[in-house]
Amino acid sequence: MQNEMLTFTSGGYRRLASFQVSQLIYDLTVIFVKRFVDPKSRTCDQMVQAARSGVQNIAEGSAASATSKKIELVLTNVARASLEELLNDYMDFLRQRDISPLPPQDPIIREFRQLHIKSIAEFRNFVNQTSRSEAFFASQSPSCRAAQLLITLINQAQYLLHHQINRLQADFIRQGGFSEKMKTMRAKYRPQSEN
Image 1 (cartoon, one colour):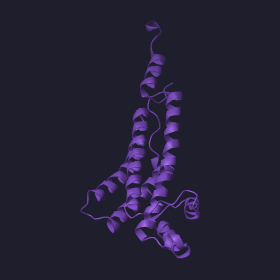
Image 2: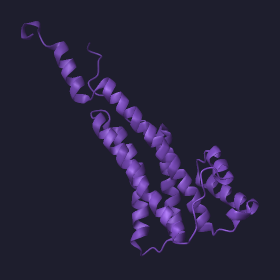
Image 3: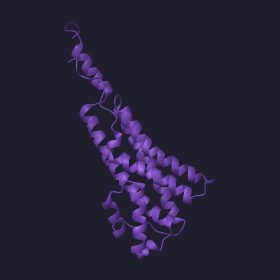
Image 4: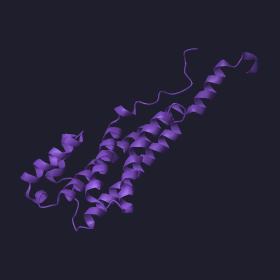
């Protein structure tokens, strides 16, 4: 019984696909707003903060999971909400230029999703190659092409976070949280005379 730990395993967020995709979204958003959004606008700061919040809340939730599965669940959901806000900013960017987002079944989007882009260089390479080979995509400005693909990345992150939240909920129902674990362990160590 001495080896039994009161806290849960925590951290390890850097291995999570949701964290990796969200971190790429953050890095690309910083580049995007520097190039294509008025730096004096509130939108510029809001987009960067929403992207950053997506990444940081995944990390913070994972670290907090040692003593609070509830906080991990809440913060992971905050990450998802932050990315939803960012998604709307990219959708607005296209709408204000009278461009519709490419549907998920579009060949460009399907190809992009299947590549599982992991770096800024891979993202840039895909944009450059596709803009030369796909007439419709090439007709869009670089900013709109980037926005189209960032929308796809955000949707991927949202999908991953949705499943992560479902798993966290199931784990919490099955294992309980820190308080339940503390009560169970305390009951094991209580002297027989107290029972």
